[in-house]
Length: 112
Image 1 (cartoon, rainbow, N blue to C red):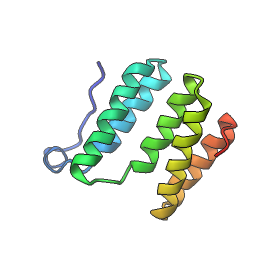
Image 2 (spheres, rainbow, N blue to C red):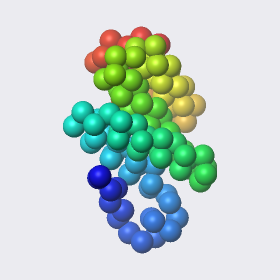
Image 3 (cartoon, rainbow, N blue to C red):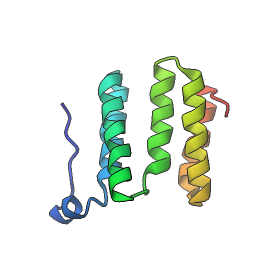
Image 4 (spheres, one colour):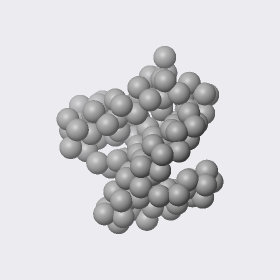
């Protein structure tokens, strides 16, 4: 099992960067083809956001969820996750996350 590294004790105490850590671990597992484990980490990231109210990486978690769905061959679910990622990124005016979601859509030919 890959465990997310945390940069400082204060990050752990506040939980500020935990959704990003879940994202990074899930992305690494996805790249290794360990899709079930990647999904578990994504689920943990979504649960953390629900508990903490942290939304820093919300769009990125949904974008990565789309990539996991594509890897599993589920284009309909990928479309839904990517649409959610774009909606969140747009609402947050997060240009980098919008750009990444659009790049993912283009790369995988996933249309919303």
